[in-house]
Each structure stands twice: as structure tokens, then as C-alpha cells.
Amino acid sequence: MASLIAYQLRAASRKSLNCGALSLRARQLSTDITNKATEDYEPKFLQAVEMFFDRAAKHSSASEETLKHIKSTDSVLSVTFPVEKDGKTVMIRGYRSQHSRHRLPCKGGIRFSSAVDLQEVEALSALMTYKCAVVDVPFGGGKGGIMIDPKEWTEAELERITRRFTLELCQKNFIGPGVDVPAPDVGTGPREMGWIADTYRNFNPQDVNGAACVTGKALSLGGVRGRTEATGLGVYYGVREFLSFPEVQDKIKHSGKIDGSSIVIQGFGNVGYWAAKFFEANGAKITGIIEHDVAAYNKNGIDVEQLALWRKENGGSFRGFRDAQIIDTPMSVLEAECDVLIPAALERQIGLRNAHKIRAKLIGEAANGPVTPAADEVLRKNGAVIIPDLLLNAGGVCVSYFEWAKNLSHLRFGRMNKRWDERSKEQLLSLVEGNAGHPLTEVERRQLIHGAEEHELVYSGLEDTMIVACNETRQTANAKNIDYRTAALANSINKIAASLAGSGSIFTHA
Image (cartoon, helix red, strand yellow):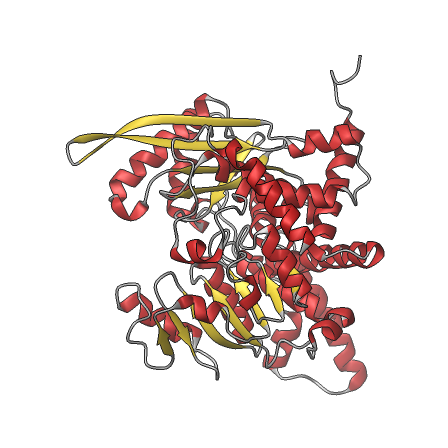
């Protein structure tokens, strides 16, 4: 209780700092769930990221000067430009934040949302810095956003907005394969990334590596197989790894197996959908799926593909789906009893108003910042295990790194070695068959000599990355007796500090 009171006082004392925000609309996330989940005095997203950083900094080996450097945002671009809509001129505001350039390029998505503001973009770019470090992706953190609701604009209008924003980035040197590389985020996808890549190419026709200026592109434009499902797959790998740790099994009284586990997922966008698909494919029961208006619930498990198909054919809504109970109060499903809760929507979805109601044993943060600092404390005191966002949803940036590397190499993964691998395996298999005197069937033979396709190599690289990062986080948490969020962030700080120290920091000493 004392720590919560101290937290409230800190939050209240910092509340006035928000009033002069550079954004035209300093805001609190306006979703119904957020308004019901958080108290007015709880910190906004950027403050929450800074509070988590300060908590982890105490367990790092970085000096005070280095911590100040790491915590601060390097550069922020704020632009406005006119776009014509229905015969009227509308002023569009966009942002790009480069939190850290200790490694280049900076990396982070661009979101289209009417809720975008400068604080959100800075917070997300900071998270990207720590996320890249925790999974050993050699990027600095960046993030961008345009303050529009994409549903209110036609495709042609969205293209004009995207291309104009890209022009602003080009003019201000905020985009380029070695400078800053955007990716999809909320409200954007391969289509928008294609527009960005084409605009950059037209302004930089001599850049042979121009395709690497953005990731998340369609395959025809240099994308990589496996990028679409990457974040959801990374969520699955991360939860699987943590459930395999004996100390986690003991704490939450769980068998450690995905098979048979009950999963509730909040958010059925790209991340939530693919996470649900991978959990379901490995034997889990998806008992609840929550959207902004309603939730679908079935204690025996929901058919993920059938629900997705229903939503697509019925105006984007779960309503009327017969194989699950449709609940008009989605918050109640967020609080349903389950083995694993996956918040995969937006930030600040679990706060002081609902943290004490959450009954999940393990919470995997597939969204960025879904749990406030005070809620994090409440959940852990109640015995829940939390896998933090900077670790669990790093699959997207990991596979974006693979796409960036593919674009720079100008070579599809597997193109050089797939057939050689198959021939080598075939020769070995023939030798084994001869010695054993037992020839295999053609089907068995093809399965054994199969050379890896690009998506299989991507999956393999992502799985290895998540396993290593999860185990590094576990080791730090056990060695220092701290929670997993603090451990992951402390590891990130130490890696960034080592990079800064190794390169030297000019002009900082007399």
C-alpha cells in the first residue's frame, strides 16, 4: 500500500508537466476499456515507460551520465501539411521520433490513428530502442505516426497522405536504409509500406539499397516471407519458453504445456489473430477473443479461423457468431479466468481500476504498454507472471531486421544453398539406406531431404532469437531476484551502454 501511495504522489506531482505538451492534442487513450481501466492520476504512456526505465536502471551497470543519455530522445520531427478532402483543405499532422542512434538505422513502425500524439510516438520509439537491444537486433529505436483515422479516408487520399509524409521524411533526412527504416503499425500495412518505398525510390533513384528504406513490404516489392505473422509467432514462442521454466510452473501452478492451456486474447488485429492461430495449432484452447465493442467467449475453445471468416463477412463484427457467446461487456472477458491472457490491442488496457480483477496466471504483453506501472505491481503481488512487451512482441522487429538484411544483400534467403543442402542430404540418405538395407518410400525420402524455404529460415531465426532473449531475461531475473520486465529492461540498458562505451561518446568530456 505504501508503494502505491508513493506512486500516486509521484504521478500527481508530474501531472502538470503534460499540460504544455508539444502535441496539439495531449490526450488520454480514448477507448472505453482504457477509460474504465485506468485512474485519472495514473501516468500517461511516456511517463509509464520512463518509470519502468528508472526501476530497471537501478539494476543495471550503467553510469548516471550514460543512463541520462539512454533515456533521452535524440530527435523528433513534427510536420503539418495540407490535403484536399471533399473540396476542403485539411491540415494533417505527422510525427517521427528517433529515440536512440547508438546503432543505425533507427527502426520502428508508422501508425495511422486519430489518437496519435507526440508523447505516444516518443514512448513507442523508446520501447523500440529497448526492444531491439533485448533481442540483439542492431538498430536504434524509432517510431512515427499520422494523426488520422484511416477509415475516414479513401484509398487514393491515404496514398496522397502517405506519400506526402514520406516526402517530409526525405527532406528532413528521417528515412533511408542507413538512417531510419519505418515498418507497419496500427492502421498501416504492406500497402502503405509500398507507397513509402516507391516515394523514397523516386527521390533517391541512385540508391541501389533503396528497397531497404522500409520493411513490412509485399513480397513483390522485396518483402520477406513470414513478416506478416512474425509478431504473433514471436508471442507464441515467448509464452512457450516461459511456461517451460520450472520456477514459472511452480508459481502459477501450471503444467508448462501449451497443449490444453486456456488462452484469452484482447485484440483481433494482425498480432492477436496470428498469436491465436499459433496457440490453437499447438493445442491451446482460445476461450476468449476481445474486440473494442464485444467479445466472443467459449470455455471449450473458439475456432479462430471461423471467427475471423465470420467477422470478415459480417461487417467487421463478431455479432451473430453462433459457436461462441457474444458478450457486450468485453471488460468481463479480459477478467475471465484463464491460464494465459494476451493483451494485443493498445496501451494502458490494464490499470488500477481492473488489475485486481484479472485472474489470468500469466500475462503476455503482445501490445505495447498494455499494463500501467501501478497495475504491474498489483498483478505481481497477486501472483501473476508478466512477460513484458519489449521482449514478447519483438518478433516483428526481428523479422523486419531479416527483411532489411535481405534487401541489402539483394538475395532471397535459401536461394544459394537450398538445392545444395538437398543433394547433400540425399547422398547421406542413400548411404544410410544401403547400409541398413531398407529403402524409404518416396514420400519419406522427400520429407527428409527437403531444403529450407525462406519462411522456414525466418521462423528458425525468430525462434532462436526469442529463446535466447527469454533465457537471458530469466537468468537476470533469477540472479537479481527481480521481475521479468525489470530484468529485460536492465539487460537492454547494459547492452546499449556497452555499445555507447565501445564506440566512444564525443564532445561529452573536456
